[in-house]
Image 1 (spheres, rainbow over the protein chains, first blue to last red):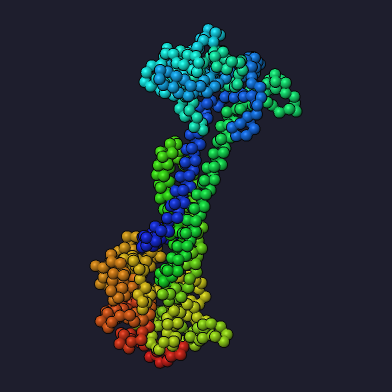
Image 2: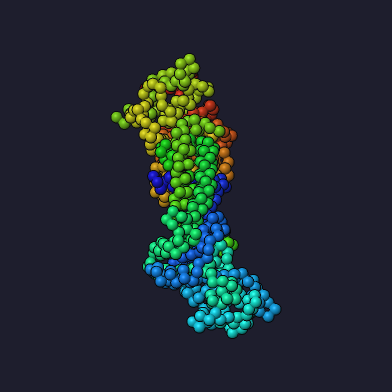
Length: 401
Length: 233
């Protein structure tokens, strides 16, 4: 009986190819939209979350002041070197802690110049941020202790000032002083939110104090937690230590902040998840509209095929066989729509992923769900027209013009 | 015993359409026996009840009152599905308007009743081709119904009706839409299947020439049988 219904349904679909194509178009577009949106959302999430992970998810960033709004912080006294030493000494589970103070400056070599960020720090910076050297070396203890004019440059600075030329051992000018290039960092590429991580010049902290800042402030401390140590716990310890050192009472607000990159990554991922779900939901509406389209055409088709149904009934078809035939027609149509929708979605995902430069991530469970849903649409929206067909009176149906 | 049980037997059949004041009595007590292998023509002016009678005989409609026995089995009590099964296994229909499926090949049209019977594909194909050959259209098997002439379409319809070897073939004005040459072809076919396969044929017609092919003419007038040559005697 099922086999017969399938045979009859396929013959009926073949008899009117054009109408069948128009019927399933809504489903094709709906399924394609849902899958493409979800794949694209997944790709974008993966891309940004990779960038965040490249900063290191065990990274904590300690800054003076509180964020009061997007991009701005309240004014608060900077840290001192002793704060860093206290963190290194007293907080358990730290792999490395790096002080930094930075300033925007112009780097000059020959007749070329490039506005960049000059960062004063020590060797802990390279390990906290997972920097590796393409060439050269990090600072020696003597250079750090004496505040020697040496620098390690990022790959953007190298390209801007030296082109293909070897920068090692060459002197560049930073504002009023010149320093010798002793190392070149491996490129990290574009970071989160479009910030170029390779656009920097690193000098010893003492050199920065003496030649650039004119004070002994530490404007930021970057801490990496040891593997297997909870960043939340390290964060709590730093909070407590700094509250004590900066004399903040129990009821007062902190005048510093510790940001856990893992938290940032998690928050970002959940935001992206919500966005992807939203896009998918909007696309799902088009799938629903596609389903209503199927019902519409099936209803028209039942009216148009009244005589055909009369013939079938007269020949000896039972009501439930007619019902089954129309139901199977609608399910076959909507499933075909689902299959073509999936193919279209794969094509669109691939194209969009290339166009928007995000990784192509195929969400297989989503494809299965979309296919099953399209078949379900066929059952749900095909049932009403099919029941109408099955309820026709054979004599009336045969008389129908 | 077998001779005494007619294949179709109507007793006191009435059919009322509508209710109350608007009620219209289409049949007012019909007694009719049709024996196995007979070729019966039903004639009468329009509105005389012959089509209603045909629908009841074809189990497409049920009588308001009275008894209808098909091979001695009471049909009045059967539900919709049982009547569909009876049509499927014992009856064949030919209509005035041919009623083939549009945009469908002659072969697929003839296969249709076999599909509902659940006949396996190879067997179904062979039987349908045989039926098309019986009506002289095996060359046209792959043509769509709308590519065929009226006479050819009616022959496909007859092939569809006899492909299941029904015991009764009901033809409702089968020549009503055809010219006289095609009409004669159709009547010869019906007469041949009646004679060679022993299929009982009941035909409604307006045309006395066509009724000539029948062994017996049943005349309807105002919901009653007017004159018949014998009824059940």
